[in-house]
Amino acid sequence: TTPQFSVSKSYCRKVRLSTELHRETLSIVRQLEAVSDRPVHILEQADLPVMATIRAARDGAPMHVLTYRPGGDLLDYQVATQCAHVLRLYQRPPDQRFLFSSTGQRVSTVEQMLRSTMKDQADTAAIQRFARLVFDWLLLSVRSIPVGMRIDAWLWRDHPGLRPQVEEGLSRQMREHLQASTREFDGLRIPAAFVSLPVAYALFTDRLLGHNLFSIAWR
Image (cartoon, rainbow, N blue to C red; front, top):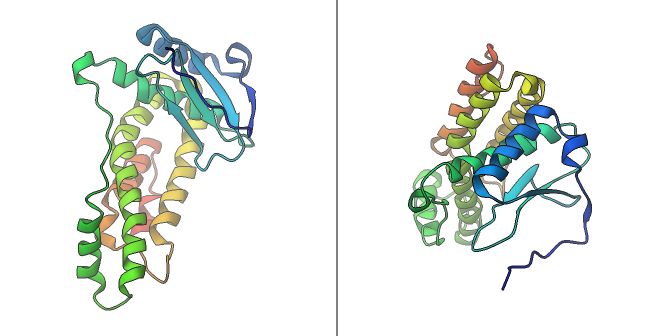
C-alpha cells in the first residue's frame, strides 16, 4: 500500500512553486525532483518549532514534504537548504544513503560528562533532565552543522541570486545558536567544551560573508 501522510490542522496552504519561489530556488527543487523521481510539496505549518524541515520520500512514499513556519521573509533560503540536504542524499548510490540518528542510549554518557564539569552544582534529577536536552541539541548540531556549512557555501557560490537570503538566514542561525548555547535550564548552562560546532559555524559564516561579527561573540 502507498504510505499516507498525516497533515496537521495547523497547515495553512500549499506553496505554488512556480510563482512564489525565486527561479534559482525553483531550479534546486527541480533538481531534487529529477534525481529522486518524486515531487516536492511545500506546506505552511504555523506551529512548527523550527524554521523549516523536510520529510524525504522513503519506503515508497509518493513525495517529499517540506514544511516551514510562515511569517518570515526567508522562504527561498529555507526551501533551498532543506531540498539541498535531500539532494545530497540522492546524489549518493543507494547503498551509501544514510540518515544520522541515535537510539538515545548515549544520554547517560552526556550525563557523566556534565557531572564531571558541574560537580555539585545541581541535583541528580536536574542533571538528568539537562542531559537529555543537551544530548538532543548535540545530535542536531552534528547532523546539521557540518552539512549545513557545505550547503551554505554552495548556495553562496553557485546561486548568487539567493545571497541576500543566505546572509540573513545565516545571521538568524548564528543568533539562535548563541542563545541556545548560553540559555539556562534549571540553573544549568551548556559547558564551553560542548559548543565547538556552533563556534566553527560562526567562524565559517564570518569568512563566507567577509567580516568577524559572529565569531567575536564566542570569544
